[in-house]
Image (cartoon, rainbow, N blue to C red; front, side, top):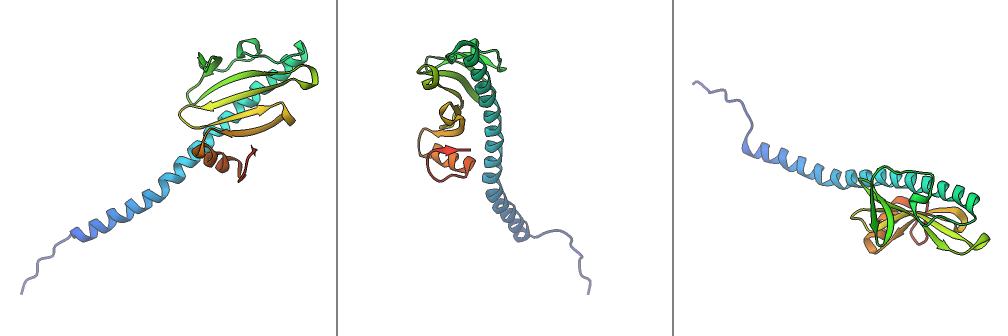
Amino acid sequence: MCQENKKGFTLIELLVVVLIIGILASVALPQYERAVEKSRVTEAISLSSAIWKAQQAYFLANGTYASDLAQLDFDIPGKDTTASGTPSKLTKNFSCRAVNAGGTGENAWALAVCRRNGKPYAIYYARTNQQLGCYPDNEEGKQWCRIFTGKEEEPYLF
């Protein structure tokens, strides 16, 4: 009796391996997307913080806040645009702008906003207590703001 010595995998073994890889990928992909989005939020925090510091310097020099990034002694790399009627800079991931929200003296307040292109949230600095926060446009934005800040309810402050 002579037995053939066949080497290789059966179809069932290959299907089981493909199934396991698929399950691992379906678990890992959402975590990867969340990590990438969090790194982009770090970029937004840096940009809005820099705009806010430039706004504070402008306020000290002029007694009012700037309503346009061009008025600030600060340049964000990116394309100039007018988003929602407000002069903004469009980077790869964000549209950023400086906003003079009104008031004078101690009652003056302003925003430094970076809105994520295609995502329903914005990262902002506001003169109100000089706090950094996440502003959602809808339920999906609220979910992202909860993830970024670790807060369950508004205001979503870092």
